[in-house]
Amino acid sequence: MITEYAWLVPMVVLLPLVGAGLTLAAARNTWVQRVVSMCVLIGMLGCAGVLLWAADTLGPQVMYVGGWTPFEGITLVVDRLSALMVIVSTTVTLAVLAYSIGQGASSFDDESDGHSPLPVFHPSLLVLAAGVTTTFVAGDLFHIYVGFEMLLAASFVLLTLGGTLERVRAGITYVQVSLLSSMIFLAAIGLVYGATGTVNLALLSQRLGEISPGTAALLHVMLLVGFAVKAAVFPMSGWLPDSYPTAPAPVTAVFAGLLTKVGIYAIIRTQTLLFPQSRFEDLLLWAALLTMVVGILGAIAQDDIKRMLSFTLVSHIGYMLFGIALGSTHGLGSAIFYVAHHILIQTTLFLVVGLVERVGGSSDSTRLGDLARISPVVGVLFFIPAMNLAGIPPFTGFLGKVGLIQAGVSDGSWLAYTVVVASVATSLLTLYAVAKMWGRSFWSENATGLTGAGPVRGGHHSALGLGVLVPTTALVGVGVALTVVAGPLFGVATRAAVDLVQRTPYLEAVLGSGVSL
Image (cartoon, rainbow, N blue to C red; front, side):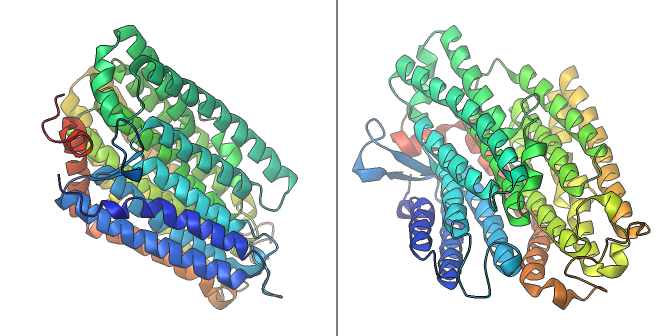
């Protein structure tokens, strides 16, 4: 397997870590922090683009850190799946950084003296990016755990920015739940090592078949539970709607787009590579069904746009889990496509809600109204990704859901058909939830007179600020562009699914050609 671009693999982790150190050293110079952060993320995006091309055309790119073999050292692997996840996650992180810079003094930076009262924002965001990419490129369970812990540390700092009582309370809840899942995951890693003598994913794919079925099932369940908590799979999703909406708009956006998808990625990787003959497909299908239904029912009951989007986030995790549970090439390909779509759209919507708060002074739909007249641009920016989230054709949300429905019908079991029906109902209810918020916030009468109390009065977009409009508009444009290139994107996702099902490309890249399954 050709791995001539393997030297780029550690760069997507090293760049944000070095950048975090530089921005922390430049804590008293906001402009240096901004320049370094932007350059780091742009560099990561370039590396991710090359790695995606290399993984798609040449095969998985593998780096043996320190020159050690996979039997003894750390292995970093970028295949089609991880490369796609890195490039999408870096894209939304770059947009969130640009948005936060555009907010200026109202967010994290003090424009009056050029210094930042919250100098930890930039290094924390870069550590978060490093944690995400570490999880995606790690070739062993322990470094997936390391990536999770980097995420946890950075997330708590970002979640509690400003130190308000509401944010600290939400941050404590988030940390408690995350620590619980981390303890389960770490215990599972210890048991895996005790049973097999390794935590390397490629080696585990061979050695897990040599242990007793009961032990393998226990390890499988522990890993699933640890990842399901992080992915907010029902019934372990109650923490999410109370944690995300309290943070500033850029933080909420990057959380909503990325953090749960890291858990989904870990489930995809372990299900396909370590437990291809899983005993728990039906359990995952039930979890997908309940996550869809409970999440969307919670979304319908909300009046606050942020909380509504948080519940739809939980609900749409069910779609991804549906494709994973099916285990077919079509199901996995559609799930991967939907993960990429959802990272982008969910981040975009939370950034737009930040604009709504700046225009109307609130994200509570009962306190908003007439926003379509006051700021038509914000209305359009909300409408496009909202329809994409609801799955209106021809957007990527519709294409991803159709792919999952087709995979469910092809499966043919009564449970798969049940989840198909639930997915269609959830899509319709998602449309109802976002349409309700759209009607209340943008078209209803302004009964309280609060709309326009924010920075924007009379719809002057210059007052709203190009610094926040440009990155949000750009991210909306990327969402529309994905619809135009949905065919090639679905092709990459499908080829990634083929590799996941076959396992041979990954194993041969790490262990060498001629490896036996």
